[in-house]
Length: 235
Ligand code: CA
Image 1 (cartoon, protein in one colour):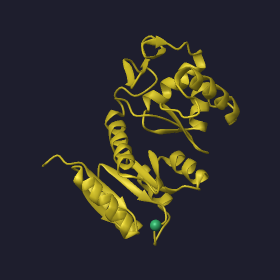
Image 2: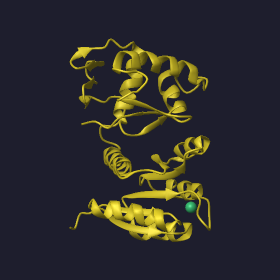
Image 3: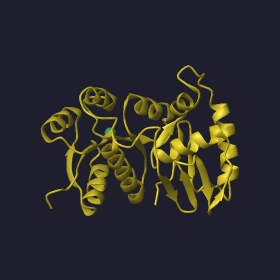
Image 4: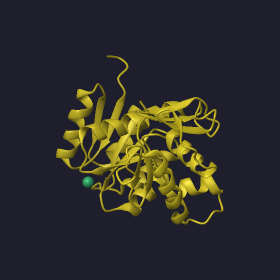
């Protein structure tokens, strides 16, 4: 196949690197691997991968420096491999320009979904992404109609307030990707809004009551603890 998309895996733990390689190869991706930051930087400039999966703890440098350096000249999607406990780090890497993270340990379907989502958003940059989004987002019984600015569950309008709609629309627009609390607050209430998650939490509780059959076990909008929210991928 000539049009395989190339994934660069930057990870010094060989069992994780080979786990990811096996999954991606079996699903039609071409794979490059690097065990150090310097090899990674070399491969990024020589092979222009379509996406990078990056472990932060590398033997020769902090992966965050790779994000910084790559973002100064390239928009290639970067997915960071992260430890479950490091919420602050997840927020940092997203702020630095990483597209997403995967928390270790992760499974096959989660890895493939993250890669798919990041590649899809990358191919859309500069086209229809932005707040002027039109059309519809559909996942299961949920429909977000960007033209009517309403959301529906099983065809019934769930009557979101303006702010609730904006939140749902943003998450739908970036479906499959985590959006940080800070990003959402700035988008909804402007660049000078205080970084106060409480108001976001109140809105989300109301949204879930309207949208989810069981708000305690959401099917559509997931909480990424300490980081933000993620909408399920569209159909
Ligand atoms: Ca490592």
